[in-house]
Image 1 (cartoon, rainbow, N blue to C red):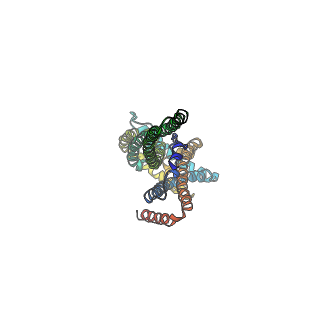
Image 2: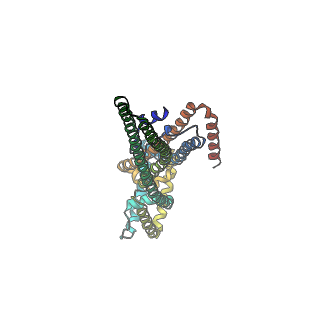
Image 3: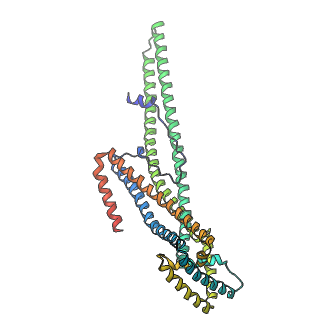
Length: 392
């Protein structure tokens, strides 16, 4: 009876929908949690997702705090009383005047705009590291895309194979129905010959029974093999989805990192940043020749830093490189706009990784509640993973 139930029962063939790269899918139904290896692999995948998210959060928080401190400094400067603001603007004005005087001495063959020079100079200490980060991120982006394409191809291959197996199972059920109808028809004809014409139909019964037995055996074997292969394909598909989740996380984080670095350095590629860096080094060497103007600039820069330090400005040195913003509110607004965009970008990444960690933790809790017999094993895996992360 079990065979006929399998044979004529309805089997749903699932179609794999196109995934959103930012959407993390948990295919819990395709995991056999009573299988120790599958159970451990699934929990380890969730823990790795949590670790990946927490690692990104720790890296992003420092940059987020720095950008926030810049915005706080702007509010502090803009909120100064008129007398103190006038003093600060006077120092900034002299500093800006010296900057303009020095500009007249510079080589007229401008290699880069003043805005580009100021931008590179404000980030001079981290440009080389930024170039390396950008090159590495761009290279890694290509590798991730290749992995996603390969995994997508495998995913469609599994979908095609499942469709084939589904059609095969349906055909076998149809064949079974045909065999059953044929057997019933033969029996009816033999009964008519036996009862209506008094013919000896024993051999006919034997042949019909033998033919039906052979047909059922062949169909049963093929149907069982197809079902086994379907199970293997579904398990392999589940493992592939877990792997896709990990690659998607890396893709999203790497894409966000690239977007942020492009925004931070105001470039569209690592090659452009390298080009600007080389131009900046040449320009800096030419400007070094104007030591006297630089000396005056240093004096007023220290004076500006000293005054700003008395106003609870956390990063007074930053304003030495942009005194025009202290004088011109439009420039201050432009700088604030750029910082707000950077902070929004960082917040987007923080929210994504926080949600990722929370979702993975919730997934573990739900599984632990659904399978309480494995709660201790889950706790041990969690403690072991936490200990390894702490050592690292």
